[in-house]
Image 1 (tube, rainbow, N blue to C red):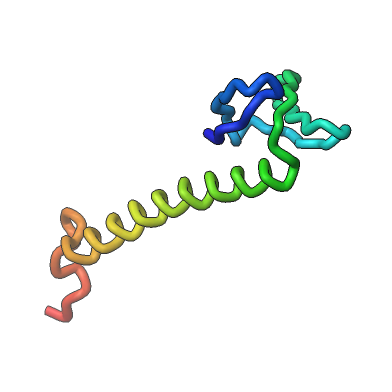
Image 2 (image 1 turned 30 degrees about the horizontal axis):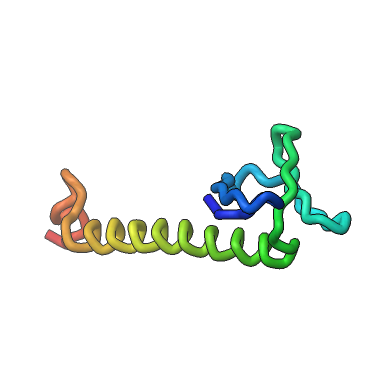
Length: 88
């Protein structure tokens, strides 16, 4: 979610994953996949930067979780695989 400001000053959170496109007409209009549109104070470039920051945060958390899972699997062999690669 990213925080944006309506023209009347009201702040709201919008789902960055649902944004279809952003245009300046000259007001900044955010169009959503649902067809709904809102006009906000932030400029198009600022909306783009907010979405990029949001995605970096989301993917960073996913990568950290994935790295922990891989590290755990390296420490503990899967059930039934202990010694599977030995030459005994």
